Length: 263
Image 1 (spheres, one colour):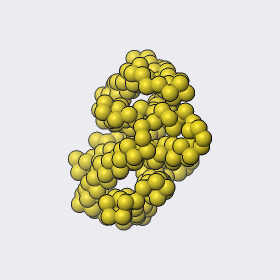
Image 2 (cartoon, rainbow, N blue to C red):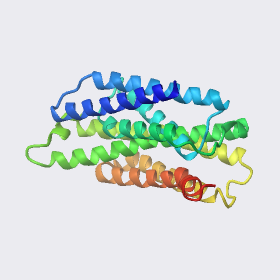
Image 3 (cartoon, rainbow, N blue to C red):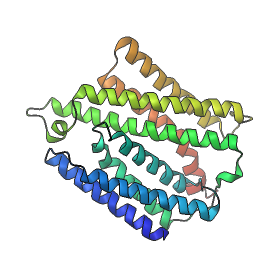
């Protein structure tokens, strides 16, 4: 059953990606890729739900966590497409989600189960994952914004730039995503300081410091946007800098300990 669901999800992720790429090339916007992506996300979610039932908890191993994060990112993107024209981000998000799901299916890892933690730690972990997922979308939106800005300067503008919403709309969407992501990142940090006994312990200090610096960067960017009208390249650079720090904080140690050192 799990293999069937994973195969269905991976195939529909791929099909959606190809159709979005085709529509971008033809400067069209159709609903079929979004429908296929919804099927992929539902199958992906069922796969994780069944795995959760088998383990009586979620496995927060490196690949398991990456698969969950990619699912949440894809789901948040699809929810955003209901009233925002952001489905072009699926060109990057959907194949990554399919890849992470394939790795989760075919590369079993040592389990790191959620029920090993109390509800306070679980709250911290889940708010961290949601924050990372939202700011992941913001980082991809920033990259797309930079590409669009560059292509609009060419004569005539390239098809990707023409198929996207106006630059001002793209910037507004970027800062909305950053604002929501920053809210969950704040909850994650607060829950960490309240519920974790020593947040600056040796095995946590890099995560804590990098997350705090990322929080400062995103907060400064929003303040700069409100007070000084920051936009364009400034917004892109600050967004990507903050996201890279979060990427290192969330996945850097897991990659080293679980994949490289097998601990």
